[in-house]
Amino acid sequence: MNAPVRVRFAPSPTGNLHVGGLRTALYNYLFARKNNGVLVLRIEDTDRTRYLEGAVENLIGTLKWAGIRYDEGPDVGGPSGPYVQSERLSLYRDHAKKLLETGRAYHCFCTEERLELMRKEQPKRGLPPKYDRACLRLTQEEIKEKLDSGTPFVLRMKIPDSRVVWFHDHIRGEVEFQSGQLDDQVLLKSDGYPTYHLANVVDDHLMQISHVIRGEEWLSSTPKHVLLYEFFGWEPPEFAHLPLLLNPDRSKLSKRQGDVAVEDYRQKGYLSEALVNFIAFLGWNPGDEREIFTLDELIREFSLERVGKAGAVFNVEKLNWLNFQHLRKKPDAEVLVMLKEYLTQSAVDSKHFDDEYLLGVIGAMRERVMFVKDFVEKSPYFFQRPVQYDLDVVKKRWKTETTEQLKVLIGEFSRLENPQKEDYEAALHRAAETMKIGHGDLIHPLRLAVSGMGTGPGLYDILFILGKDETIRRTTSAIKRLE
RNA sequence: GGCGCUAUCGUCUAACGGUUUAGGACGCAGCCCUCUCAAGGCUGAAAUACGGGUUCGAUUCCCGUUAGCGCUACCA
Image 1 (cartoon, rainbow, N blue to C red):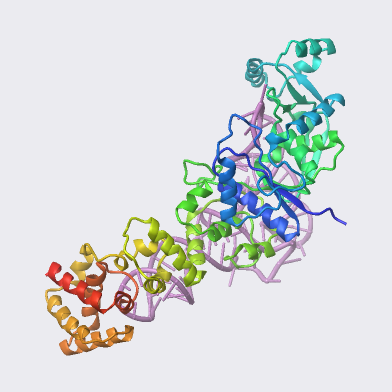
Image 2 (image 1 turned 135 degrees about the vertical axis):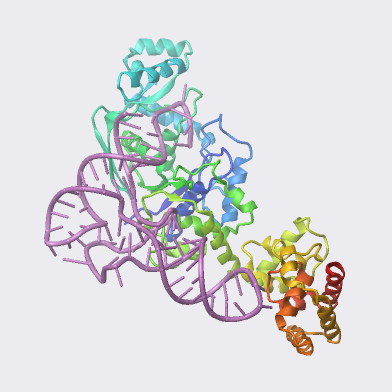
């Protein structure tokens, strides 16, 4: 019988959640749900210098937006709390003390300056940069003396000399390190806070985490963690180190080369479904050719076995396409809500458009928009009369005879009563036949007249949405202005 | 520098030694459809980093090289 699956997402509150962090959270979430397990949110705020006010709230909001629900965490509680590391300090101190007593850790009184100097000298002598264990040679008396005099100290982990430390990684297979390569890592800082290494091992054990699923940047420190589990006499969890997310130039995804915060994408109008779908596929795929997935479908299909090993470039083009796909899948009613929401906060206009009208716009523009904002940006004429006419289109479509022809067309339109799309079409055909001209001779200038543009949905759709009066008004106005 | 990880079209990826003239998707180009723009359909260009092995047979296994990335903090 296997232990129940318990995984955790353990970000540090130092700013907005990174898309890489979101993917880690997502994979943990998917793995937990898929295996009927539990997802824990744990805040790793052991670096007081990097703490950012409001970051935790922000993080929680972002996860919620993405649809990633956790079962235990700072705001929802749970049996293994507290879920904020700064509220668990005594736990770390007690455990560090145990290591001290068993000789697996030792006091170090070295100053920042000495360590810096040491690191500068080591490469010159061809040595790997590691703590030189100066303080390990201190006698009990010397240690007591320094302690008594209040000399600041840290607790370091005493790495065994020549051991092979290995572990199995779900993604990378067997990984092994020579312990001689490992540094005597600081476990407890001089301010009494634990470092990541101590805190994450203690918490993962106490919270009974079964699988540690985290970014590849942790792979190199995993042997230290494995050793810590051993020192404590604990069974280590299983590990899965996720491939990194990359910039287009294949360096580690960073600011400078585009947006990295989930918040950035949210503000640009990306659907959470699209971002989640996209990010899930950066390092994972279902093994067949399906690409559009909802969160629930991802849960059904996800497995660690299908996670790849190589880093993946964050390619915005594909994300855009996915946003289009997900937006298109949404029912009209949902898009309507989003469009109304966008309209109220956009400065474009304050006029009121009823639902029926907006639904018409949505129907006409659906296949042509990637974002909700595109309804307004790509078809502004549904929200305000054309303020100008695209000059290239004028040049191409507006002939000298156009004015007279459109007047005839208006005459035809004005006789219509409560016209439907087909009625506009029939009327236009009649006008064209009367004048013995092609349909295009009317269609193109008319489109320009009512929209100011040369592109968009079918003309009759536009006319129907705008309505007869507005169509005639705009056409008349265009004739006046383009004559 | 040391240690570790990684390596299929520009990008995300499929292939779990043979069914492969290496498949799909995004993007790109062309054609069809068509009142324009989209959408859709069709077509095309585009990859196994390099060198050795193992094997009857390597994208797939092993070794080396190269390249990229990560770690190398009293940061996570």
